[in-house]
Image (cartoon, rainbow over all chains, first blue to last red):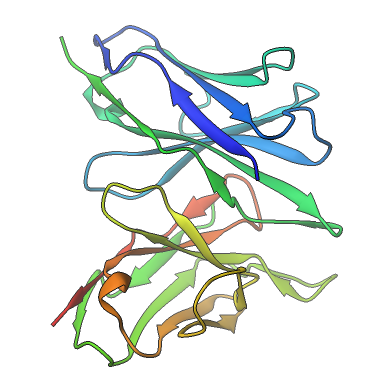
Length: 123
Length: 113
């Protein structure tokens, strides 16, 4: 069973860039049909999908964040990363990395999650 | 974007009683070519990441107790907990994976009465 673990600064200043990394263990980030996602959850609120990346480098982003988001992948380190620019207090959230995959010819829902990391945007 | 609307926002149910949560999508999440609803339900306990309970609107994941069931098709779905247990206290989310961007309902908080 794939394990995911987020890492990165817990505090980011307004207007700066938030950067997080997700380390994948017990599995290869280059596995065919696996998609590597970022999802966030503001304190006390619901879930917002940020985007995903495939091992080939193909990405898809939420249009609401697309102008500020970059997701990248490092297959040699079995990691993928999130970069969110020009952050404001509204970007304060728990950030999760997560995985979904093709199985049996069907795209499954997200079924593996990291524990999440709280990022606070404050001066 | 497909908007997912859940109701109620919260509910309090006695132990052993039934709890039902509704989810409505702004457009159908039924894929006609395979007749599958791309609708999932998650449970999120306090301080934990979401846990996948049900996929394809009604298929329980391995290890999920059979008191959890999902139903519905097209745009209207329901998660039912047939006999509420103390460990079921959580927020429940519906999620559509039919189209991008993936979207989630606003969540329904289940508490013990």
